[in-house]
Amino acid sequence: MALTASCHCGAIKFEIASAPSEAHTCNCSYCQRSGAVWTGVKPEDFKLLSNSAEGTYNPTGLNVHHFCAACGMQTWGDSPDWSAIYNDDGTLKPGATEGVPETRSMYFNLNLVDDFDRTSIPITAMDGRNNW
Image 1 (cartoon, rainbow, N blue to C red):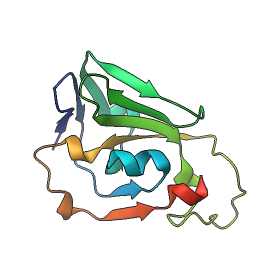
Image 2 (image 1 turned 135 degrees about the vertical axis):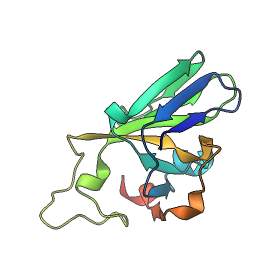
Image 3 (image 1 turned 60 degrees about the vertical axis):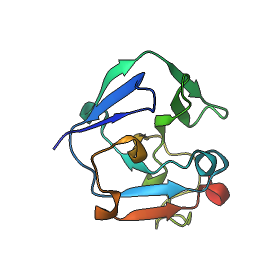
Image 4 (image 1 turned 45 degrees about the vertical axis):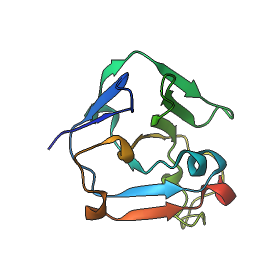
């Protein structure tokens, strides 16, 4: 089942090939303020339908936050794949060395999908404030 998401004003709209099976919140200084519920998506499963007001925020050069410059909604982002070397609580996975992962991941804000019951999937709290 494909999902369609859009910002509040509709200037940014995208489609995800299938419903997610999990999501997460993050308490980093950016995500906590935005209130987003993030879920991962493969780039080939993400289709941008309209993008007339996109803005980006990338203060560290690592995490690229995309948002609607017209209404302010946080839409999607891409970042190093922190889950490749860190557990949800920020501890290193066995055999991993501390640092920035070389692989990248893509996430979208599940709050922008009108017809999806977020209570149907687990939503994990990530400790981004203290760990990356």
